Length: 340
Image 1 (cartoon, rainbow, N blue to C red):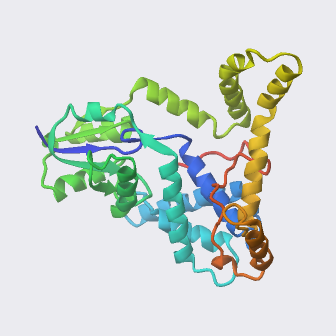
Image 2 (cartoon, rainbow, N blue to C red; image 1 turned 60 degrees about the vertical axis):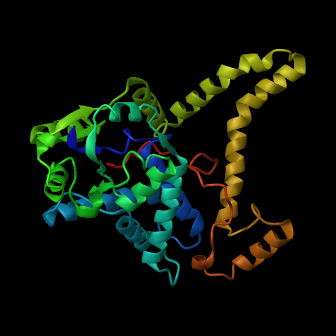
Image 3 (cartoon, rainbow, N blue to C red; image 1 turned 90 degrees about the vertical axis):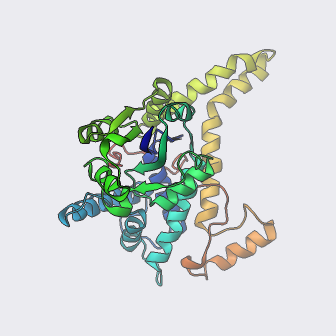
């Protein structure tokens, strides 16, 4: 039995239903809709806000490296810088708004992640006295704990370390060395499990840790497919067409003539209709309307009074999350993913 077992979080314990940067893009859309009338020049589009966030992450990473630590930064620090650069509304408390945005981003992660279906079986093959998660990530350990608890995985790893908390990461090997010192564990008594060949296998193996490369074929292939849908609209719509086609033939049984033609037309325009409905929800958020959750009379009253309210006093009343998949979304091929 090992004295210590550490587990990677992303694509080991948890998997996303989307590209990781889609979470950031949706958070940028949230910010754009919330402050649509109070954005700095050049930031009227959520892709521009997204790219600025990537720029800030790079700047903070380089600053951390110059300061003598690994290239780490926290989500709150990134969002606070982003608010200061993008939002021009008077009286905005950047730190407080960053807290709100971080909470919204955690909610997005909860809604767009799920437990890896095979991780328990593999993890159970390596018994240890103590189990921790180790993640190279910009969310602090407390937020990762909340995410694991939300998915019922806190029984596997009830505690752990996020690289942003101590500004040391797995990629450099410094996080592993920190763990050995903090918990008085020798490398040969430590087993680590994760999906990244460099950070989870090569680096810990070079230190003397037993490293287990966890890369199940089917979940990994599904991840690559999901992530391929992010940067290319043609790939996305081709994927939607394949999903529709899978159930179309069975649904067409018994339909003839105009009924059949109408059904086929419906399958073709359904994505556009979804985009239209989402654009209505987004407009609801942008105008500060409570139409999605209140009576029409109350919604009209809120809409009339919203223009007199400070943007910082509004709360997104519409329960529908903002999304990049709408008629108003830009999809420039130059929008390359961030480093993380």
